Image (cartoon, rainbow, N blue to C red; front, side, top):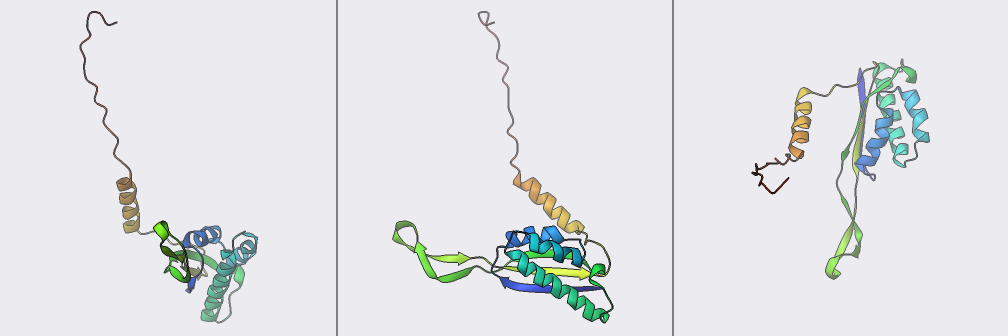
Length: 154
C-alpha cells in the first residue's frame, strides 16, 4: 500500500530540493529522518516535514499498525513551481527596472510498506536517449586531400 504527500509553492529552487531528495530516496523513514538534520541545506527541514507527513498518511491508511522502520520512501521528486515576482525592483540594462524573481517548487514524496523503487517507464527512457543524442553536436568530418608531392618536397 502507498501513501503520498505533496507540498506546493515552497520557496526553494527545485534543483536544490532534488539534491536533498536524492540522499533519502529508497531508504526507510527512520533512517531518512535521521539523515535529514545533518544535510547542510535549508530545504532539508521542509523535506523532513513532507516525509513525516507521508509516513503518517500511510499509518492512518493501515490503521496505525505500522512502524516507521518498515515504511520506505518509494518515490521522491521536486517539480518547478511558478516564479514569484516581488514588489521590489533592481537596476537593469539601460536604466530599466527589473523585478526580483524568486523560484519555487512543488515536492512530492511517496511512501510504501514494501521496499522497492519505482522503475522508469520505457517511454521515459526513449525520450531521455533521444534528448541525449539530439543535444550532441555531430562530429566534423575531416577531409584529407591527396596532394601530389613535388619532386622538391621531402
